[in-house]
Image (cartoon, rainbow, N blue to C red; front, side, top):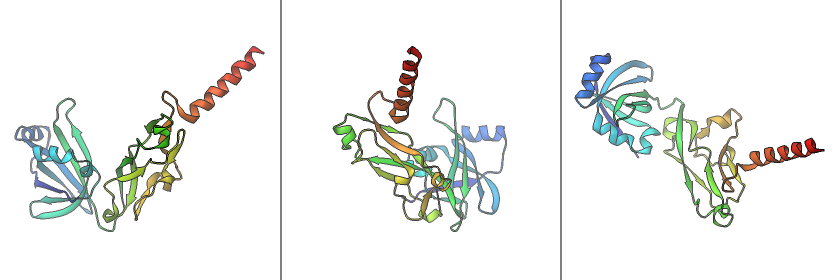
Length: 211
């Protein structure tokens, strides 16, 4: 899904200038990286809010137009008002076609209700991760990664190494040797294997103390 961001150059900076922009329905921001000088920008608040509601806007290479210039960017930071649905500031990073990027990509879990551990074992799906840090070239960046839970049994876990990453994309954690747990199916109210082992150790210690 191709998304476009329309922005204008921002000449005035500082707290007071940013406050005046917001009163006009604009959001101050900055675009940096790509070997070019950082540029202060301003964007329409309502249009930006609409974009931010799309999951893919947070994990896709976007096309940004600032005046007559067009560049490919990633959304890197959004500062929100503490209690109002108002964007205070936004940061974008330019990306080059041949430069590896690191992006957190959302995980989509499929067939949860069909998993034997849920359907027959009455287990509960525990999402340890809802997104995964991926590094790849911009053209290989997936909008999301699907994980099929259709064959998961009660007590089973899926780790990063079990996920099929799209061609050209890799897990940053796996590259560091961290094969973390992504999702498990547990007994309702249970804490999984780790808690069971701790419980058994505690029972043994209690039994020893009474001897």
